[in-house]
Structures are given as structure tokens and as C-alpha cells.
Length: 255
Image (cartoon, rainbow, N blue to C red; front, side, top):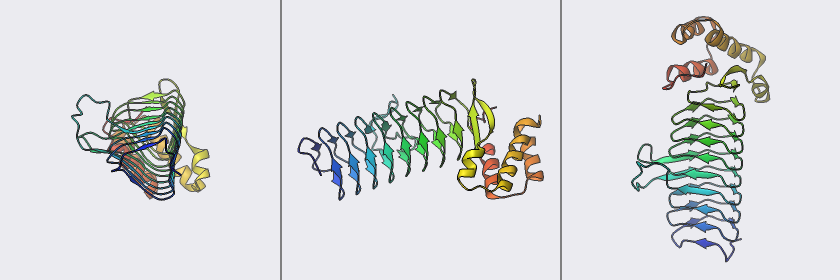
């Protein structure tokens, strides 16, 4: 299961049933769980904390030091959950003093050439398209779909169940349940197909749709629009999530 042509530092902790192909490099201060498959020319560097059942395709680099000139060699980590597909040439940098760790959850697909920068937080069950680049300290909530070649500005927050058009770039937050597209990027409706696939009821989808009609089409400013949402839309966890997301947005939401 472990090729003699791989290098594994004697202090690295490797779980059971781990496949390690030729020309893999595994550094010290690395912990790898069970049932992982690590293909050729993968580099797993100091600070990596990897769960179970992941597959790393050739050329991936996990837990390299941040591309941040403020980094001074702090003891930080890059933490990856379970059952992720990390495709060719994906790079996941470890954290800085800002948060101390970069996190990728479980059951994600990170396609070829994706970059996850320092202190980013990627949730679970996300699909991230080829060559998408995430700057430092971004947050992507669960079940998001980010298409290919998307550029995400530092500190941006992407909500759950969104779909972001390929080739987009943005520097504001993208609230949950919507489609974001066009150039420059804008609200382009709710992600009806995605919500139905995940079992959202027609009534709930309509309430989400009406919420965004108020936010984006009523002509009200965001503060007044949220007041109107609270008055007119039946309360439920999904609507509260939208409201809290927007109220807590540090960069403002896309138009």
C-alpha cells in the first residue's frame, strides 16, 4: 500500500489502509487518517491534519505555508475532513496567526487547479470548479456550487446552496440559496433546481423566493428590506439564516 519510492517522515502519523503512490512527499508534523488514497507526486507538508477516506490526485500540495508576507512561521494547520476528492494540482495552504488554521470539511469535490488560501473555511458537500481561486479568510458554507475559474476576494462569505457562474469574480458576500452570475456579478434568481434536488418543499422555496424579491426588487435599502421580510415572510430556520447572513455581512452582499 506504501510505495518504497515515497518519502514519509518518520514522525508523520499514518492511519490504516492508506495507499501512498511513488514520489509522494509526506513531511513531519502530519496526521493522516484511515482509508486515504494518495496518488503520485502529492506533497503533504507540515501542519496537515487529514481525516478518513479522502483521495488526493497527482500534483496536489496540502499545507504549504501561506502566500502571505505577514506569515512569520507560526505553528498552524490545514485541516481536511472525510471523503473529499482533491483533484490534480489543488493547493490548500495552512493558516496564519489570524485564525491558525485552514479548514476543508467533508464530502467535497475540489476540481483541478483549485487554490484554497490561508485561514479559509470551506464547508461540506461543496463542489468547487476547475481553477477557482479563493483568497485568504474566505468562508463557503455547506452545499455550495462554485463553478470554474471563479475569483473570490479576501474575507468574502458564500452562503449555502448557492450556484456561482463560471468565470465570475466578486468582492462582496453572496447570500444563501441564490444563483450569482453575469458580469459584473449580480443576483440572478434563486437556485430552484438545487433546492428541489435537496428536498426543499415548494412552500419553502416560494418563501425564499419572496424573501429575495423584497431584498432585491422592492426598492428598499437593505435594513428596511430585512424589516419587511421579518414582517411578511413566515419565520423558519432558512429565512432566519438569510436574515442573519445579511445582517452579519462585513463586506455587504452582491447587488
